[in-house]
Length: 76
Image (tube, rainbow, N blue to C red; front, side, top):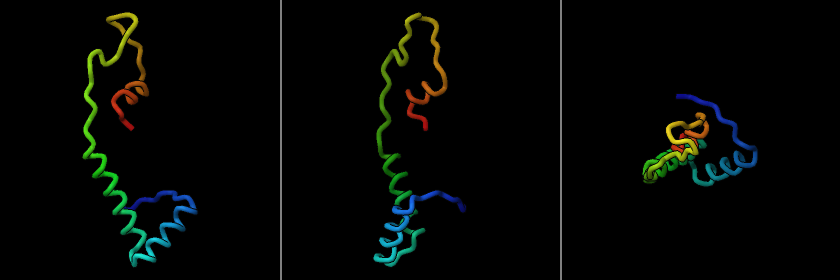
């Protein structure tokens, strides 16, 4: 799959120098970094939830929006 990302100029220059010094392509280095990020995320244990997950000042009702839910479950 082909995609486009914006990389800050300084980061791109440093990446290009690193690739040249190692005799690799930018693609190889970027893919290795992405795989490392994915692997690190999959190795991290999920936090355990304790009850009550959400506290309410009025038991039986709760006002919460999607952003608050995402904050609680760590959804991007």
